[in-house]
Length: 233
Image (cartoon, rainbow, N blue to C red; front, side, top):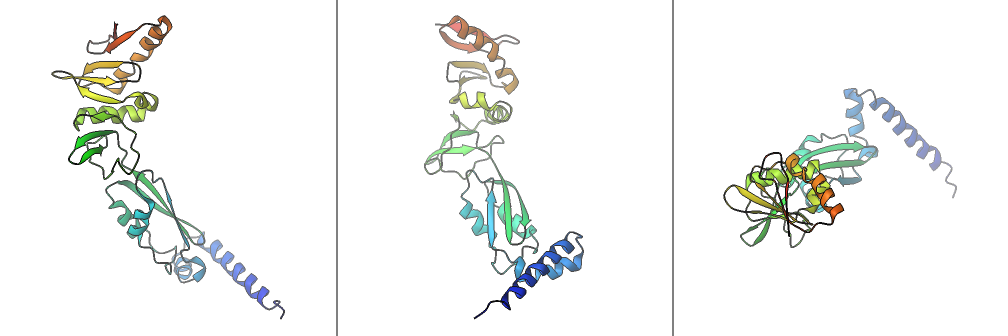
């Protein structure tokens, strides 16, 4: 049997959809209302972008997208449902015509692990306890002995301003009254508890000089203003 009659119908549907797409560019309410009723714009696919720690399946379950729904249906309810996840810091849903929803996720990033009930717990720079299980999800961040707000804030600053330096930190531990020790890959750095990312970065020229001299270093000391003291072994 010839498929000649089917071809005009198929091309007719494609042409009609193209016309609708052109009309939608004008963003008039009546064209969007008409498109929302067209099967051509039903949701066929949902893409999750930006999910690093949270399982995309969890977000899909929260979306509860009906496959009979149109991509032109309001996305605000979808964004609200995803935003309610404790790991999600922000979300934006966009349409990719004709039938795809793209969910852009921004997460609360862990900056440290601290001992807690049942094992290590992940915290972000604001001291927020995150719903991450390090035994199930790889969380490669420094270890702290308690979720101290100043230490978490410091780690958050370094994570953003100097990812290379952040990657070198294995732990931050208290060291006497008002002091901390930042354990780096080469040597520990002793500092006051109000240490900032900018102050910590002042070790770079000193490290370069010590490396040139092949010095054996016990620790670097940032406790004294405008000085970086290297204690040798």
